Amino acid sequence: QVQLVESGGGLVQAGGSLRLSCIVSGSFFRVNVMAWYRQAPGKQRELVATVTTQGITNYADSVKDRFAISGDYAKNTVNLLMDSLKPEDTAVYYCNAGIKRTTFGQVATYWGQGTQVTVSS
Image 1 (cartoon, helix red, strand yellow):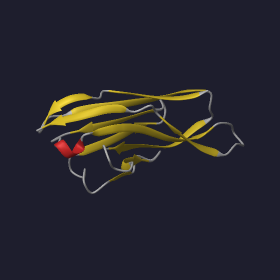
Image 2: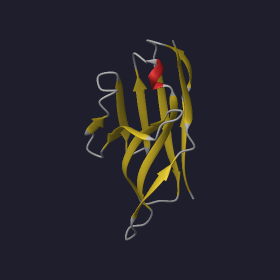
Image 3: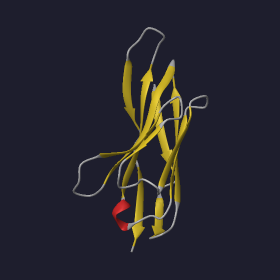
């Protein structure tokens, strides 16, 4: 019943920019936290950035000063603006959200299907 759908991935040259978007839809009470992860070929999935309901952000060291995450908890969307992209940023990017399904329910983690970002050298 809960879906996370990413968009905005694609092919970009090194130094370019992309904006990823994710929208959470379905039946739920509240989105508690949103984040972006990525998984490059041959590597484990890693946390890229998180944003709290208060707008507090955290970034992986590898993307600090280049990426910006923003969340709209009223609209249940999260974006990732990626600037100065490098070939090593190439990965499948996944939207992630901690969601409270009902007023008295527990928070569960949900994932999007992923969107491919390819940065050419």
